[in-house]
Image 1 (tube, rainbow, N blue to C red):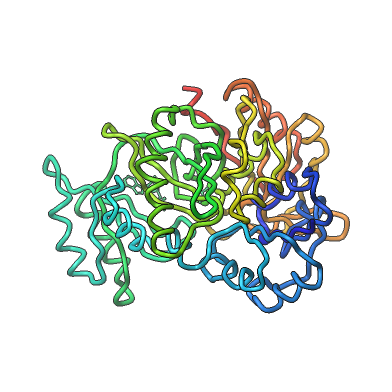
Image 2: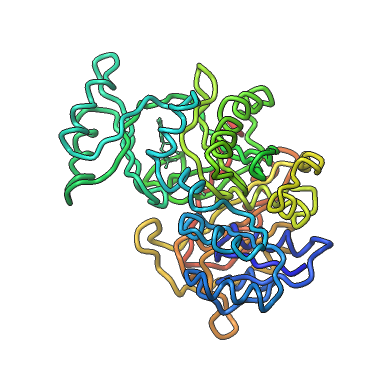
Length: 421
Ligand code: AMP
Ligand code: GLY
């Protein structure tokens, strides 16, 4: 079967690497791709925002499955448009993608079906937002989380630990006039991410991970798209995972099916493990990046076979997805300046030397220039290794990082620290 993979990041490099090992694969095409993805796939010269061009390509190349990596094309309805020609797609349609596209949509769905999540208000004006703050006062201090609606690449969230911080965030949010936002209760606990495959009705757990969102060691500095991750997340015990599936994920899948907008793809549940049990922080309608890199390093199955069963509504016929007992850990190498303006163009050497240590170097923001690979974005590489423990996987990943020659890049040196501590 010919497969088209949509996307250009480290997540898609990991998917391409694993799809390339699948038995049923004839040709893997990728659009727009990157030099890492090009090691496993034929790059298709396609503008993925032009859905008609994508459909023409699918017909011409006799594509039997389309795998959509990032959220933007999903929210944009690419999966719906491809399904109109009868080709199976791994990734939800526009309506179900609202789980990521609109925080208000998700919060309202949770309220309707009783899914545990932070108490919240939807607001559309500065005065309305300020009026909610009294509801989030505990022990004399106002603590809440202010979230702009819509896709914000992890940047639209402010955790306010005082009324002054909350008021400043609200002022910034409404500086340019009306906006849509959610203000919610601050939840205490450890965070974990759970990945679940859904073919619209059946679901299957697809592993857990823990991300490192802040740019600096010790979880300091501004938020990023993710500076590293490891899998599985030991804090999400089998009991807590079962609760999260039963109380959060399955009711969501059932509600979308009942609404006639079935969820087909992978659902990424960002969870807070509170004293009262798991609560939903947010949904993403795709694999995490860099969480996908660690999931693929551990997935012990045929990825094409699995994603195809999801896309064709046959998930219930498959055995439960299996993962190696290893810990996988990935360290993101970013370009200097990230998450502000990254310094692009820096040469990246030593990828072969890093991989000779046994690690895999997934490429994200890279581009080929003459015979070299250079940095072309904020997050540039995801250096991924496995080990029998988090400490071993961490040591292996940093051995590979140290074999790279990427002077304009940087990374955190403490990925996995919570689990190791
Ligand atoms: P989000 O974009 O919704 O994932 O939020 C980004 C980060 O903000 C999360 O990973 C959490 O660390 C934090 N966060 C979001 N919502 C809450 C909440 N209700 N309570 C505590 N922290 C939160
Ligand atoms: N690493 C967080 C995300 O993919 O949203």
